[in-house]
Length: 401
Image: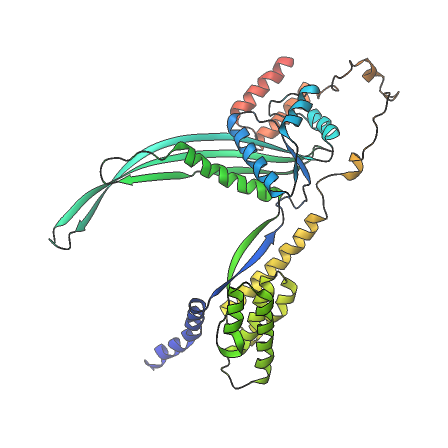
């Protein structure tokens, strides 16, 4: 009885060990999965609101450069936007009033407005020393060394808002928090601190990726196992994959699958692998729906195979993301009916006699101080304004009261 229990446990662990070695022994194939924009909308044209400080402007500039390079969205030129703001006397403080948003919507056409604010970008430096002990392998004497480290860190916080210029509705908002750090080490005194610019670059790159993923579709490469056994032409199919000949690899894999249906004299493990390999090649081609039946067939033949389970789950996720991308592509972030090119009426409607006395070129009256104060408090409660800016804007509005 004492011998039976360890033997039984060893037998139960064999499938797990076999799967572990299968993952190590077999090559990996890259498959690309495309994610929809985080907003779930197709952004066709956008403008960045004027930045209130250098950090915010630097992040907005970096985002503008990447968006222009992507060629997926039209970015309103900053000089054009600044000219419109100046001409219409809308201001460029980085704090956008509801009346300003409505006016910009009429002037810029179908667009979304992106408001980027870096609320905190605080650098700090510190040093540490650690004693390390080792033994000289020749003299056998103990060696004591002091490892000294100089660290540059950044406490970074920013917010981004994406607004519909037609209605002022917020499509999405995100808080960006990061605390990157870099270090230099030396055994001969304290080394120089890493450059401030390098640490700031890390924070800005992370923030930039998050914002771009809100606005644009983005792809992710994942690696899945591919079997390269000599049986059923799997090795030859893998050679075609390495040569980036997906069509040739698929033909060989399909031939191998047909052979597996005729030849029943091979080891049981090879039959689900023939199904699986066809599914993986389809997956690599971006044909997720076509890959699914083959991956399911492989898992049905060997339900405990973690390799098959992972691939099927990945394929199902890819199908879900593909459907979400289709929905985003058919849901543009604009209200088309409100932005048709129509001539402006030559005279104001009679129902608005007060507007006739307004001087030519002046904007419509902005919201009341009470309404602006309420809006300011809402932004502060949501964390989209830091305390310093909140108090400054609040003081300006209270002066009007």
